[in-house]
Length: 76
Image (cartoon, rainbow, N blue to C red; front, side):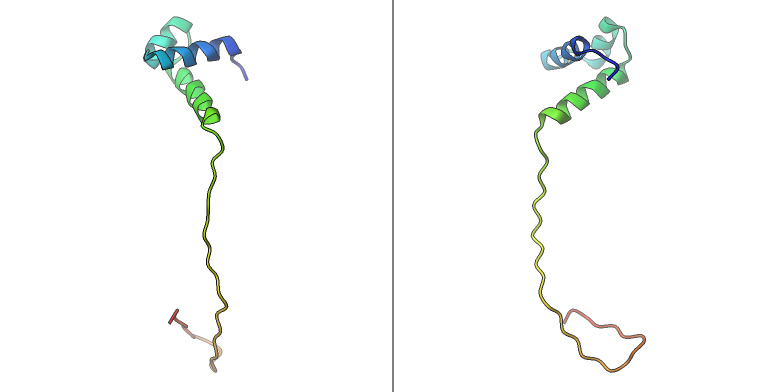
């Protein structure tokens, strides 16, 4: 990480206080996009784990057919 924790804390405190990214960047002498990148990385880390819940329902599908090629079997 190329920015120290003091800079990161100043960016987070500034954004939480309602200052714009441009104002924070001018005070710290860094670019506005750098401020946004650091804040978004902080925000993503504090959001907690991202949990995906999938409900995959499967069942056996039986098919009896006699041709070998060009067979289209529908779900019905």
